Image 1 (tube, helix red, strand yellow):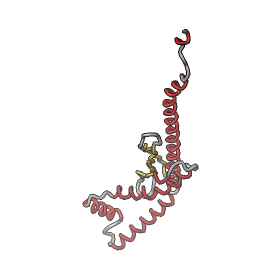
Image 2 (cartoon, rainbow, N blue to C red; image 1 turned 60 degrees about the vertical axis):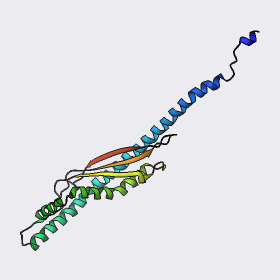
Image 3 (tube, rainbow, N blue to C red; image 1 turned 180 degrees about the vertical axis):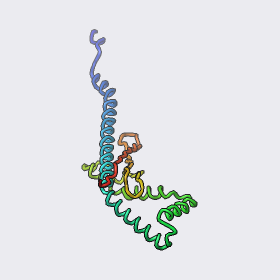
Length: 190
């Protein structure tokens, strides 16, 4: 008769495990995703920083070439127009003509600079991501900022890039967009 009132405890551990296991698995997936996002963010930061440093260190020889070309163009324009126009007046004229058509030359140059730096950022991202967890083609250079005064490049150079990290979790079909920027003072050789 006493046996009838005793509780059977077979399977009680299974019930507790069934209640705790989903929470534990969710926490594990969340932790893995946070680590994945952090690693991608560090690789993107390293790629953008390295590319910015490379461009900033190599800008001085380019500035010398641009300055020499600008001086030659200025002399040619002055000789061709018998000293009536110079390079700055031609620049103003081109800017006015493009302004009539609603074209901002700085936007055009910024887009060209972003597409020119894209392969370098992708290469540096691949190097920073040596284990190949992330696809370098998902890197997108969104902005290239160049602050110079005249042709003598005495300012800074900056790159802003984004990377889309897909979230790998059950029932989740989203991506997280990471963004990193790096700015470097342009080396002027002095």
